[in-house]
Image (cartoon, rainbow, N blue to C red):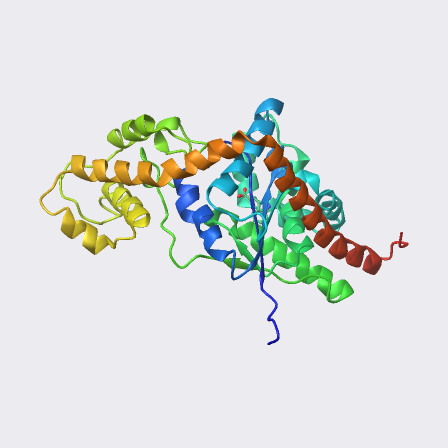
Length: 333
Ligand code: TRP
């Protein structure tokens, strides 16, 4: 039987801090489910990371930790291509080329640039401004069909499509136009202290659960999580955002429905709900943390994974880069 070519997926994750339970539930754990059906590349976006200042030792450590975490959540490094963006020079090369096909006006409309430049007013560098162009190159280099991204990245994906369409219009048939990939089930996990906002690793420590938090820390953070004073366990994100957030985390972790859960908590108090979420979180994260520690203890293995990943990624990226360079009119090497 003729083999149907699998669709290609690319996603990137920045090595800035440890991913949260929200990143895990909303994004990372879905990646494992895609590895048989799609041709997947997952990139540690370390070039993007330096758009804000990074401490060198920390950047290196967090990058390695992220690779170990991708393996710890079960991604098979044979089936998926796992690599560091900085190890594949075509990303920087492509970013320059695409810079020249992107308008200042387009970039100025990016809301994340506006947010980030307000937050880092002392370091509004050009990289922060052109960040979406680097990201567009990440996606287009691999001719990705689908890009799993969170809501905060949809504008960047849109600009990527615009740039690709423009280049295709000028030179015909260079890039695959990518689409967003939004998992069917994916709870949005909110901050434990301000449950009207998304859980974020850049907020104060007690707002989020990190994938690497110890059981004691997890217990403490949930104990302090904001609820409300009416005492009833009911799913109502608008009026009861804290309780609803705990319910949807529990749903996501146990696979039960909201209705099943609310029925099982009838007549019970918030303490019991918090205890159940705590147990489910510890149970989910413990095996991941155990595997994470094993991988972190085996640097030689991590090295083989990222070297192999970079070689495979680079091979694919080079084909697209050469194709574009030829179309632009460069003398071929
Ligand atoms: N900008 C993305 C983020 O901060 C990370 C990223 C970089 C990315 N390159 C990408 C995501 C390509 C998807 C595709 O979350």
